[in-house]
Image (cartoon, rainbow, N blue to C red; front, side, top):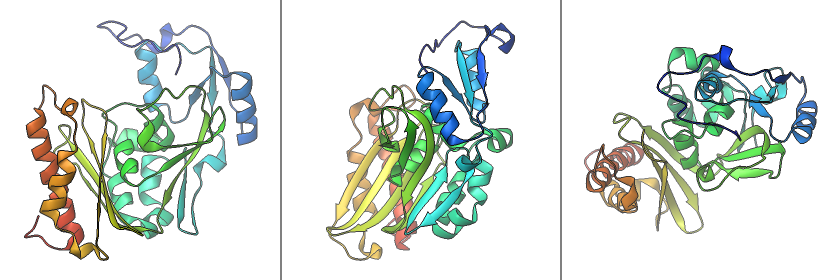
Length: 288
């Protein structure tokens, strides 16, 4: 993504304005990793739904590595409670995956609710994450699930999805897969009824201290914010949706407010969405 130039004018450039570039189309992960090490500034192409938009914004790659032919990047598995999803899995494939449907059906449902039909068939998990656009929903969904991104051929081997906006990625090589620990996961839900103003992804996990509620608030205009609360409870039905929702919403920093909604309104809205999700999780609609 280095060399990207945003805001290239009021009229978008066409693809025909791109200067010549070198295209590589490896058929194995090993070959692709070798190419990224030889060309650390290369641009990686997957489904290309977002890449074309970046071309129009001024991205001019010197070397483009298409990973579309690498079959192992399309694999989905669940072993010992670790759900592993290849970076080339499309939105449509992910929402219909038997492994995802059987382990975290609400995740499959959330994945199936995003994007347009055209993008759903072309857009990939890896492309959606590494585009690092605030309005994209997969970072919000996966951050609440505590997902990890796995890389090969770069300077790092793994990063939590929730850290996408906390650092400059630099040379990460190729995103090979995303993993989710499903063993301790008790419940997951996604609320997007108020999008683009705010979306909330929420997961409840069991640990030695009790139950941890992780929520991620996203919007069209601001980076996602990670919220968390640990309750001394042994059963999800013991959670008070109104109390936990208020605690989570209060963690939103002042910079979460913007021209589309003040921080007071955004905290109120996130609190409502969290309560709604927790009411569904606990089966206590009155408290929601």
